[in-house]
Length: 205
Image (cartoon, rainbow, N blue to C red):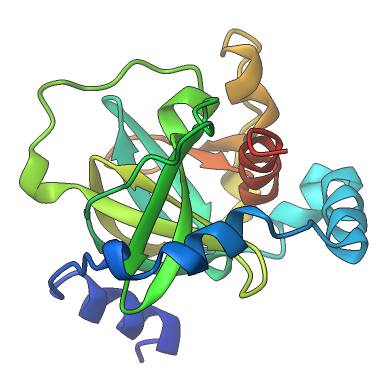
């Protein structure tokens, strides 16, 4: 049986991107001026402070994707949407990475970040542009989109097989990494969506 969020993503992968940001200047200004709620900051802090092993064992479904020639995963329930790559508009005087700009999809204006910057990775110049997708994480009140080279699939995994991440990975990548997921067709790095979002939020404060 296909879960509702799985069906949403599968449908989204075939939808055409929308780009009508020119008509939404007021909305863009309001979005960037949005204060980060104290409750949201407190919840993020609490979630990040949880023991890693405990939070991992609550997840057994992941979204697999690739960026910079590497394979990554996110807990399925942390992903709001997946849609084809679309135009990202730069915002004047808001150029500090990993903030990239703003994009629009199905009438929603989304803050957009650079995941490869968060993870201290180089861009894969040979990635197929036609396969690129936008992934949205967060909540209705606070969400971020970022582009990946390709989305592979949604998969069930066994948390008891997870391995600790090696100490050799870059500093930022380490702070966003929960563990390594071994699979028959190649390992994947399970990322912490809250840590990713926190780093992206800092770039617009």
